[in-house]
Image 1 (cartoon, helix red, strand yellow):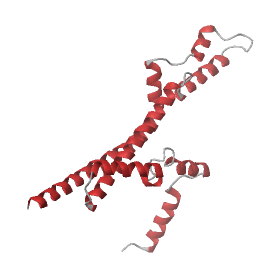
Image 2 (cartoon, rainbow, N blue to C red):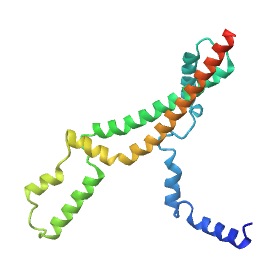
Image 3 (cartoon, rainbow, N blue to C red):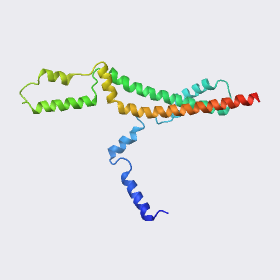
Image 4 (cartoon, rainbow, N blue to C red):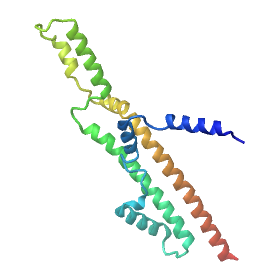
Length: 191
């Protein structure tokens, strides 16, 4: 049996060690799940709900078995979620790639540090050397731009991977259950 003293200590520790400490941290944390609305169920959006129903009808065909209809809806939900995740990933990358002035946050910090270093070691009356201005005004292009975007957006893309893995897993298990129900139905017809 846990003592009253230990319970009080655990509760006190939990209060100071759980969640963000500041109001800004709390509001940022509250928005995490809503960034791409991927944590919301498909049925919360009427347009997506209609897509799920249409896809489920395509999967099930003319079968009126309630169990198989439910399983077809689970497959369709997972597939629509998977499409939402992939669309979000596409949007992140295409927005960055289509921006002609894209410079990664890391590169901006490096350029700012370089500019500060140059300004500290020169007097303010001397113009900045042309080669330094070229470096500060340069933007990545071609494969360098793509590499910079991937490096810069890695955290966002990693977060989307979690949603994608979850949707793939849900779809896989829903398909297995649907196939098992189909086999049971076929076996019952043969008997």
